[in-house]
Image (cartoon, rainbow, N blue to C red; front, side, top):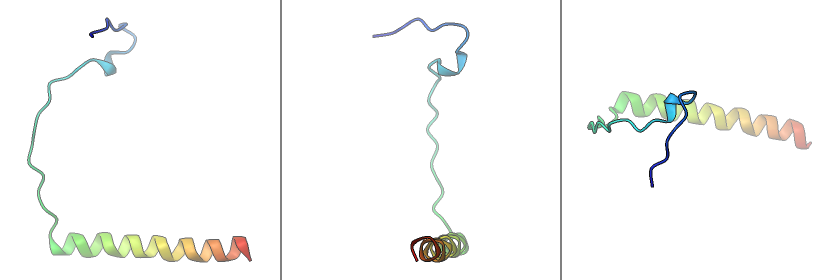
Length: 53
């Protein structure tokens, strides 16, 4: 069912979908993402230890 949208909310209007192929991550990108995730986990563990101790 289609609804008439108010002109105050043009961002919710249905837009044409464009399908594009996503490029697989390279080894360098995987290493960068892995380092970021490990750093966040490390900081999270330290913060959790400080908060819950």
